[in-house]
Length: 374
Image 1 (tube, rainbow, N blue to C red):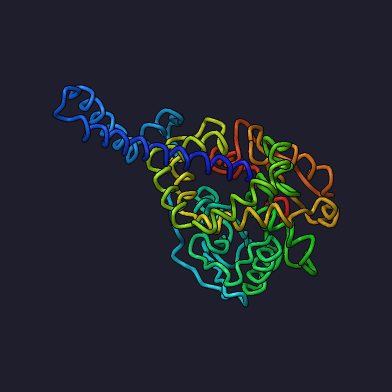
Image 2 (cartoon, helix red, strand yellow):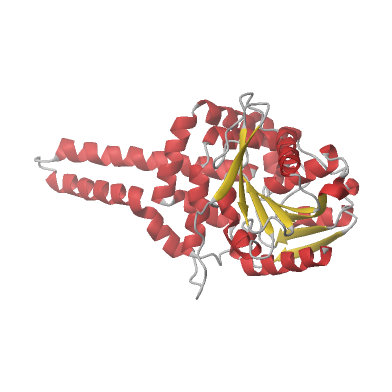
């Protein structure tokens, strides 16, 4: 995830460079039109028109270049359930909870990754709501959930939110399924908060997640660790302070395709469809920059359950991805060695969005795991 912070910043800076260049070309055209350098002015005008068009429609070209055609692929859609409720928390945050399926069946509670919302589970909720009771939450400040008044985005706070949801719904023998930070929240809940865990939770599924500060298990880990305090922290604080500007820049980066380039090379392995690439990029553009930055600080400053993994005794399914650049397979392998009762599945070819890129393999393995719990 810290690598995502850097790459998102670079794509937004590139977007600003496009704007500056566009303004320069328009200015040059205005200055030199109707002069001896009229031909130069015309070229500037054509360049400005082309760059403006690319700034608004570049994502269509980029997604076509970077993606694959997969015959008969079910393309993801940003869909919310018809049934939902809001859980108010003491810190002022409000957690949006959505439901699908029969509440008399096996409950599966999904916790999405950072910079996304619960609609990211498109393939999983479509598959598992047929024979299970599917519950999805939006993390604070994302999707339809409200951020806390005290601006606390620590993993402990979000694990407490998860515990509150489980208690509110009176869940028993549930399966918890988390992607990226969602898996970190589940591990924090299981190792630090939950009492009578075996009564509440039957099994957990950890999708492309890590057990410690994500700078240690990402690409460029040595670099990220060295610049964490002097560079990454200040970037987050600037992003918080200038959130509206960064949000506008994010949407422009999405429209011109820069964000799609970053999303492709950081979270996919190259077999994703155009719709899948656009789907995840759009979810990223929707996330408020201040919320994204505060969550990043929470992960980097306070998260580490490496010494507590032996406390996880309930059955665990761990998904890694061969080409995951945000959470390298070494993180999955470490958890595989230190969690007592677990099964490891390495998806390939797949990246950090393996539950989308390899959704059939993911769902088949998870279905087998959950059936084994019964």
